[in-house]
Length: 356
Ligand code: IPM
Ligand code: MG
Figure (cartoon, helix red, strand yellow):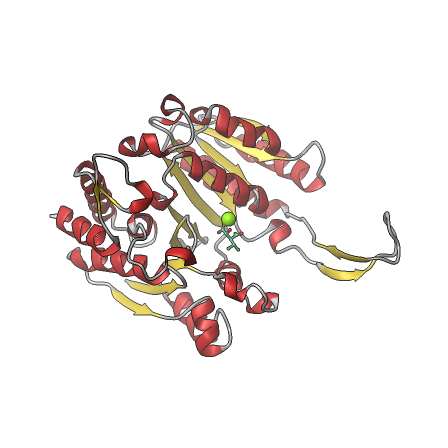
């Protein structure tokens, strides 16, 4: 089992180190190799996704990813910015299925900005299509407008597009995931305005015929954004396109009050996957040893489950995380009165200890 370890920027190195610590404490032999990615790779090799890093990722069964990005790279040309590393990995590895669970941990109910009764017990799964849509659609660029409201003016444009097979495969992923949960899929679209999402809605409806045991609901994205804060527990699996999924998954993760706790997985058709925390590189707290490593540790658990066929080990890690929370250990992002404040490495050590 080969794992490519790509810590990246900001808190990435600190949190990935803790997840590696936890993986090493399992009695499973992995081959782990580390490489630079994002701003760190740009500094060393002049590119956020160097050929050597891409090759390592392609040859691995799974990628454990930290985070990329820092404000100091905002002025670089777009192809050289850290974010291009993650977009490049998604594209080159065909990681089309992005799983973003939003789970409210009982001990952290108070950390949400929503009323406890709205989110207590919350467990929803956002499935975001990750290699299509306006993120990757061609053509895109800048030009002088020849029509529109201001002919002759400088304009920029992107292309929103989805092919039928792209929608079919993510719809299958969503219905199959729902079968293992509460058997409800909400497909989020903007079919009232966009051709792309009329096709989306039609194709999801068509694929649904193969899953009569799963309930399908269609929802416009603006309404979905509203329902997520109004009654989040009404959702089970949410499936949507790349752009809407980017926005809704941030919204969903924040309403759990614990973005530092949420893992994610991005899979291709061979179950090769990239696993990363749902949060970013947090340059403001980087190097201080205060970042919450639990999202990354839980991402390692997802990796064991989805790409490495190690369900028992995955559950061991998840159980250990529950245990340290029950012990009252908290990094500053989830700290509240009456709990014990710990740093990044202490939290990792506690999880290792709780594995036993
Ligand atoms: C995410 C991030 C990325 C995205 C950025 C860093 C390119 O926001 O994974 O949600 O927009 O997909
Ligand atoms: Mg995002």
